[in-house]
Every structure is written in structure tokens, then in C-alpha cells.
Length: 278
Image 1 (cartoon, helix red, strand yellow):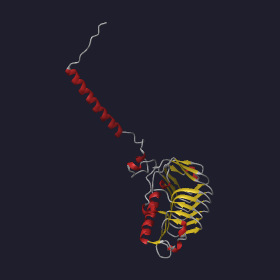
Image 2 (cartoon, one colour):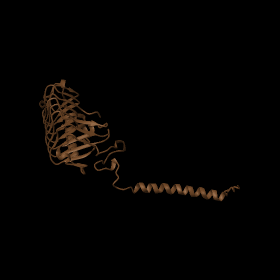
Image 3 (spheres, rainbow, N blue to C red):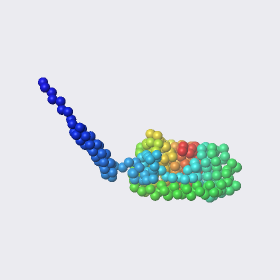
Image 4 (spheres, rainbow, N blue to C red):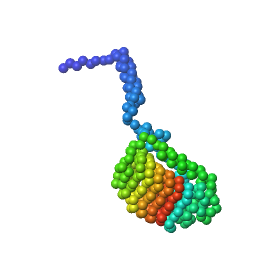
């Protein structure tokens, strides 16, 4: 068999190089155009509803976190006082303002952290610092309005106001009425994922019910904005930051990993409250 070898001339080689280079440039341009014209229905977590103002380092599923400002320095913050049935254990700072320090009824031995009051009438270990408290209360009110004002909820009236027994993914949830947690509820997501719960009525967690986090979800990224009273049942467990327009009542033996930021009173009864890790 005779095989004919074809030898390319320098002209053909140069032409081939120019053609290959042009093809590579065109491919890059086409890919860029495709990325720019991607369908608007395909959203990254950063462009999903409610997730504005999230940096690349904070990307996760769900809305942007609620900014607590200096209110985020407190495990308990109340405008009209904190009552207590001894003995509770609070890990984190505690403050009451503008009411007198006499309305802060936790003892020094029950708090692993600092207690702030606006006058000399508080517990012996309390710090008299009205300036810090005024700023924190203002930030608490601003955070409440931020959470309340989020739009385009991912879920509306889920469970007709009863979420016990459900597993909830990150997102913005909204109820026009009250919300019940009569048995265990699970929040499943990663450490950068965010949940915001908007509740127009009251929030009631039943006795012995538990809010459980899985998948690396963090209490600091869970926000419960509640227009009515909040009640955490006897021996129940709760997770997240409560932004309460009125009072928060934690019943006997209940525990919490989070913050109680109440625009009226907080009542404790032999509870364990631990502020979330930063």
C-alpha cells in the first residue's frame, strides 16, 4: 500500500493558527454573552428576594440578616423591666431602659455577663450607663422595623399558623395572625443561611416543644419578629433572636439559645438563656 504524506505549507500553518485563535476569542465572547443573558428566573442566593445587601463573604440561602446594632450585645434587653423566679442562668449581657434599674430583678449571681441600668437603683453589680442603653434600645426598635418591613415572603400563612412537626428551610415567612409551635419544629440549613419569621399576632411555643437546628444552622441567623406577646412553654427549648413588640414570657424550666429583645417586659421562671455565638 502506498501512503501519501501531506505536508502543510507555512501559509497553511499560519492560516490554521489565526483561525484557532479567532475561534477561542469567539468562544469567550459567546460565554460572556450567555452569562449576561441568563434567564431572570434563575437566581443566586445573593439575588433572591429579601437577600439584598449581602456581601460575597455572607452568601447563604434566605434573606439578608437583620442588623441588630448595639442591641446585639445583649442576651436580654427590655424597656419596662425583667422579672425572675429564682434561679435562672443568663449567659450574656442584660439591660433595662428607660425604666429604673429597680425593675431589673435578676440577681448578680444569675448573670454571666454585665447588667446595665439607667440609675443607681439596680442590682449591686449593675453598671449605670444610660447612654449605652439608650443606643441599644434605639437599635432594637430599628431592628424590629427592619424585620417587619421585609417584603416578598417565600412562605405565607404556612400551616395555617401551626408549624409544630414541620422542617423549615431558610427564607422569609409571614403570618397575618398568631403562630403556634405545639410540638417540635426543625430549622434545617447551613451556617450562613437566614430565617426571618414575621408574626402579626402572638407567638406561643407549647410545653416541652423544641425548636431544633440541623445542618449547621445558627441561632444568630434566626429572627422572630412578633407584634403580639411571646410565650415559651414550660420546659420548652427555643432558638433564635426574638424581636418582640410587647412582652416575652419564658415559663418554668424553659431554655433558649438566642436573644430576647422586648419593647415591654421579659419574665423569667428558672430559665437558662444563652446568647448565640457571634
